[in-house]
Image 1 (cartoon, protein in one colour):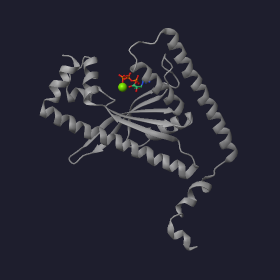
Image 2 (image 1 turned 120 degrees about the vertical axis):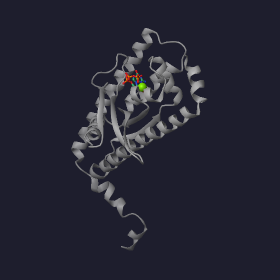
Image 3 (image 1 turned 120 degrees about the horizontal axis):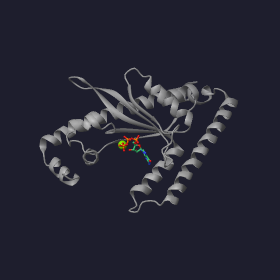
Image 4 (image 1 turned 180 degrees about the horizontal axis):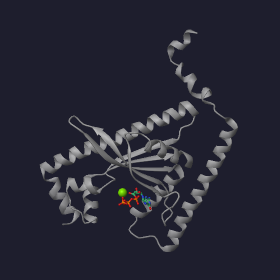
Length: 236
Ligand code: GTP
Ligand code: MG
């Protein structure tokens, strides 16, 4: 059965529609749990160290169409059970950090949280893909508390710098928005771009470390004032 036929069959079946809705709720809840954890950590860093490790967070729930397509491509049964058992990227969170150090610090802080379980870790920064792709990938199992029980839901977390994200976004667009495949010389040039932007990351990191070393901790200059800046502070 091809993907289109499978989608037609599934979208027409009310029971399967209901199951998809239930699954979406679960994975969406897991995404929100992870996002909240990250926002709490980012805020804490800003208070303690006057620095924000996270530039921004993206997240996405894989659509029924992509889930079916992936199951078909992998020759797996096209059912909800099969999707839950075989796909680890139904829920995806992408954390874009400012510096390379932030990536490992955040990954470490997430993995150490008691209710999160690390299922898989792939370090494409230490070992970039042959095309030049860089990011740290984690699969975490996140508890979602439902009315009758708790489910542990896998979430694929990609952590990268702004520079890594810049390269990956454009490379993805080039690959999917063009009918023709890149020639070997073009692939080489793309890979060189990845290497150049990786060199920028290393240099920016080094500049940041030196400046931080000179500045020391300056949290009192940044955050604490903000606590008292609402109206009643005018009483002084
Ligand atoms: P999938 O079956 O495609 O999910 O691959 P996988 O299970 O081997 O996982 P992998 O860690 O290789 O990649 C998962 C995700 O990382 C992809 O869905 C992309 O979002 C991202 N990714 C991996 N490789 C590349 C790449 O070469 N270019 C870009 N732009 N993104 C990539
Ligand atoms: Mg994937």
